[in-house]
Length: 216
Length: 308
Figure 1 (cartoon, rainbow over the protein chains, first blue to last red):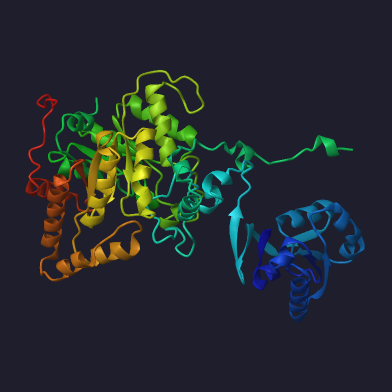
Figure 2 (cartoon, chains in turn blue, red):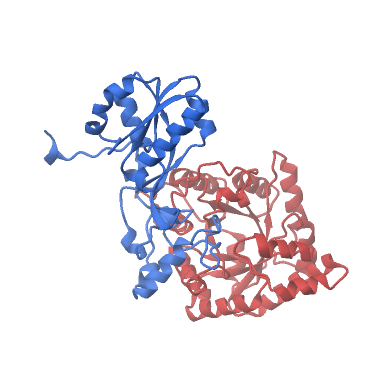
């Protein structure tokens, strides 16, 4: 899922300034599950803004990233001075495109694509490079989880299974080594992985997918 | 031809020293450091923004060293340059006569003084080795296009016998050698037990016959510095007994030199170690004394060495 982190209230107040009539718009998908931008959080932020003197209301849609869900919001959005979207960056942009005359503010920082690893803790798992090779590494992605995206083994800073860059994170290469050992496939590590083709990633430019079979 | 390569191939024990470029434009700073070590080492290894702190480039510093008759080993890390820039600088280095290149991934920028920077890591150190080897031996760029002109560079890599997973370290070395490493510079050695065990693995795999291994050493001025390294520098293992030994003496500097000399003498006895790399960070002036006391002086002279 996409993980988000709500912006501090001070930053939100600075963004909206003196726009008094505000709609806090939650999103019912990823950010609901990671508990930063769903219905509950939208209500909380709206009440906080009311305490601060704003005329704040809230509403939550199933997905802010699809037109069919944001189209019906027309009346609600026209009635306010500003919208604080608690969706990820995709939702904020979908709203901004659709309601281009309105001020749409991001209430969250979109942090990463990841998953909950224990209660209250989420970790990044995928950076969307566009060319998945995770099976070569025992199911752990070094592109995402190694701080240096090393494809040919651990750097010299792996210690007690932890990463030198973020000592509270697991060293991806220790995980890869352990998994491959369990699978009896350590021989995979002897192969030299060639330089990655980054053209499928964001570095190749803004990405787009076309499904000919689904075009109208 | 690389002088370092010539010495190693002749079977003589090589000595190199590390020089860190200044945080500024002072070429004289590079010259002074090189001047301090030049008569007691075979080549000077110049770092590429080590610990991710911005300094004069390794490339420029290498040219300054070369102009004073010192043979440089140019370090190149993949943290800051993609394959386009790395290949381009490699061509430039070859054109200007640089004979040795050490291929590294580089410390993560979060360790340095611009932690807000965006890193590159387009390729890793093994892919960098392979790319340069292919440019040299097959005259091909990474994309397969033809490289024009002569390339005769001695390629090196780093390896850390002390990092985890330890049982993978010798295998990783094998990969580096397969990718193109002809000489290897190790992480600083303080724990000889672990190093000897690693060398045993290296010998079992026959890697010491495929590449020259230079054992890394760091002279340390105090027990406090050792303790700092133990706690703060990832990938360095320092036995407590060594810290206690340093703490027990009044002249810790002298003891630090003694420890370094002892380490050099011990690693020299280990089969498969072809040389030593002295990293006297901000203490370059001590290199001549260490080399002399280790019995490694005088150094071979050009035109006077013979192959075994």
